[in-house]
Length: 90
Image (cartoon, rainbow, N blue to C red; front, side, top):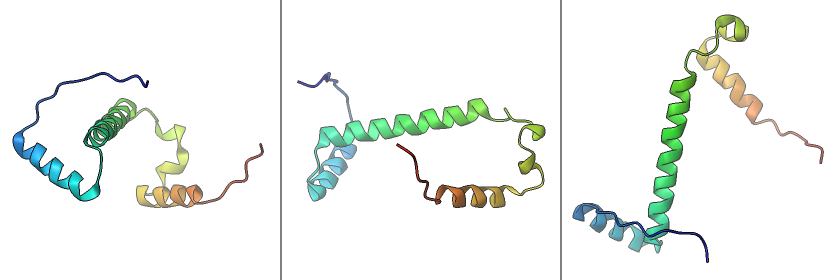
């Protein structure tokens, strides 16, 4: 038996109706959908908080490549590196 806990939550009637209609079209499990939605929302909120907590942590000398490089160019360069396939030794 997996570890779960029953939690009673009140939803506005309109939200429940929309959710039921939405899930009926996708044959999805309401409980699983709500849990996944809450997990995703918490992940985004924690990420925003992490961004806020680390804003301004680096000075210009900590990342000299950022000083003369516009942000958009830096992001494009970084993303192009992410597309590179790496061969990892195992």
